[in-house]
Length: 215
Image 1: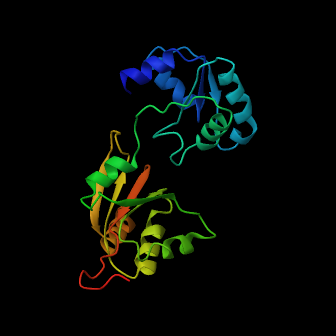
Image 2: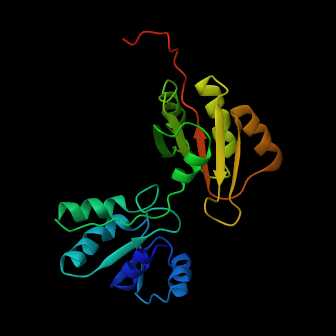
Image 3: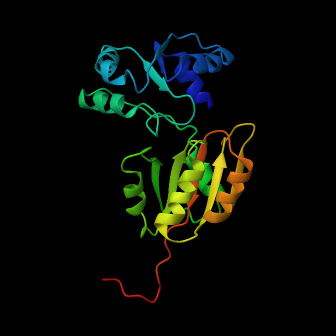
């Protein structure tokens, strides 16, 4: 938490939260007493217009997520878009985003990258990976611990190359850890040891032949 973020939350009339139980711990720690409203993927379509209108009327409303940055694989985009459409000023405060430190810490080139977030759980999953087969930029994914090994296996099969990769978990938390190796090495590691926590998977992009001519 930055000092600026604490000040903004203290001055808010309402704080929107993905999970009020989780956020209440944070607010209590900083003695922030603004009322908490639930704002998550199951209700945001019904409430964004009302919230934008409240801001337009002069209220100061802040949005926080359980972990990371709102709008990055978390609720936030719909509200931001609605506010912009209604001419309501939007301000994003710098804060934690798991994929940035995971990317930097991977040891894989991070000057150019593609952030894919969470892949579809079922339909369209393989197709999304296939579209990235010839992508030269570093690939970044979010994944749950229950599907991590499956993702690594799919990447190995569909990319048709045992690329260098890393898996980071619990970024900025007590049990933060990064495991690096080839896709096959990571599969063996997590099949043997299992995994817990929120995950970021970073995979090296395809290496094009430098001697080939670009068409």
